[in-house]
Image (cartoon, rainbow, N blue to C red; front, side, top):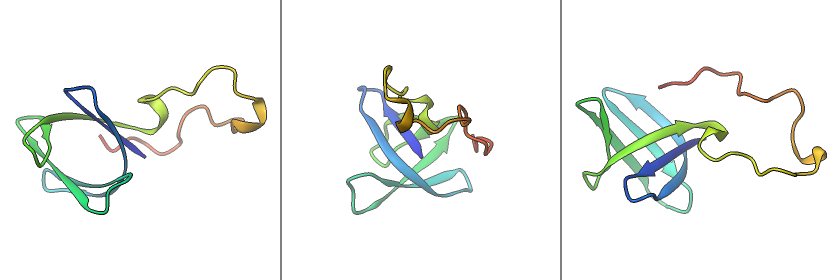
Length: 85
């Protein structure tokens, strides 16, 4: 899971499809099209030329406090796979 944050505060959820050659392709939740972001001068830029930041996993949006224990997986506080970026 990838979270894409725009400068205006918008936060989009997506799935990483491809990464390479200073670009990333993401399938955004609620969109029928694949979105591409390019790395320019160490900043990710959207198709609309906006600077975005990207975060992986649940770190962008913390889990709410007070959820019943059965809803949370036990023993998996952090993702096992290393971060791509």
